[in-house]
Image (cartoon, rainbow, N blue to C red; front, side, top):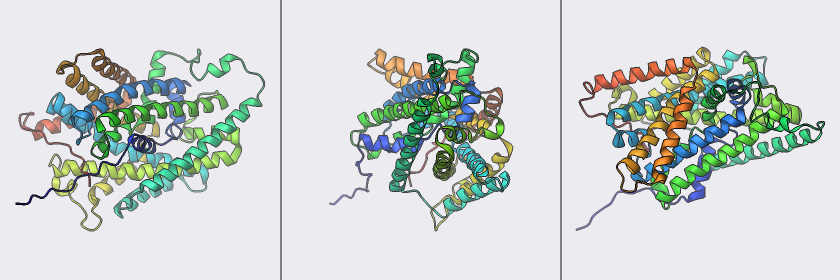
Amino acid sequence: MTTSTSPTLKRSLGLWDLVLYGIIVIQPTAPMPAYGAFSNAGRGHVVTAVLIAMVAMIFTAISYGRMARVYPSAGSAYTYVGRELHPALGFVTGWSMTMDYMLNPLICTIWCGKAMADLIPELPLPIWFVAFAVLFTVLNLRGVETSARINQTLCAAMGLVILVFFIATIRYLFHLPPQGAAFFTLPFYNPKTFSPGIVFHGTSLAVLTYIGFDGISTLSEEVHNPKRNILLATVLVCLITGVLASAEVYGAQLLQPNWFFPESEVETAFIHVAAIAGGIFLSKAISLTLIVATIGSGMGAQLGAARLLYGMGRSEAIPKSFFGAIDPRTRIPRNNVILVGAIALAGAFLMSYERGAELLNFGALIAFMGVNLASLTHYYIRGHERTLGNLLPPIFGFVICAAIWWHLSPMAKIAGAIWMAAGVAYGAWKTRGFQADLVNFDVPSE
């Protein structure tokens, strides 16, 4: 008698493979596109906001890493919450995540359009919005995927541009007249504009810097010693991202201490500030690098959103005939790609980058709070080892994420609440008042 086993994923990734993957997903230039929005929201306290967000993400990363030990093949916030807390809460978490996935390509379309309009002002902004929404959609419909080697090359190129920015900034500062200590501490604390509410409002946007770190948990089946390496890699990626992002925005704030950017310059604020230190060459280099990087992010985000909708359609959470369909030639969920592209295009005309980022973070922070509660429930409330190590990280992560979420703008919370209410209503209808089993919002791996 012979037995056959189906092929399984190869465990070939080490700790630093995961760290590199996480940095590529988040991008070394993460705070640059949204620098102007961060500065306006926090009234200049960008460094402080990025560091507070880093603390919240590190505690949340610990919870993600620990939950990946329990569900090594699932790797999703909605699975953790649904299985540890309640299926209905898992459903709500999954619904909040669809907001992230849908809004990510939208803000990438807005940013690319504004950046290209800044580079080539002869063409009106609406043309650039249409061009990038169509570009992302067409490339995804053709099944174009960015390889790991291209990602690594792009990451190295971004690293080089960042290094040039640091060198130019230090050189510029050395040629300034002697400055007092207050000049160098102003990015952390500006007595004229500081208040806890303002800083946390800035932090509610600065969370965008770290979006994507949770993707590391999806590689649990391809990692050597996943119980150790998933946790370490997730925490290290948040720490490295936070330190690098803080250094980038700190340099920008020293170059231009004035924290306010008019609406027409919000998306390209970092590019204009870099020109102070490195002239037109550095500003154009950063602009082109960010455009290429954001094109990659926009494509990936749009395909990710399409795959999530496909998973929901395949499990009949939403109409399967439309959302669960796959193009037989490209094996791409074509309907979903086109739908997400249409939403990105419409949204580019209807909302600002800042509002889109806040709405994206609305859903992300709900998922992060849910994962912290799931970790607390599994390891401390139900667990056998009720130690401070199992108690404090998820509590701190939940409390800080909740405080950041609370300081989102009223409009973001209203729009997000409408989306969540629609999800709860749909879930209640789908399950006859949450009496029937809820579907699993599974993101397909192929």
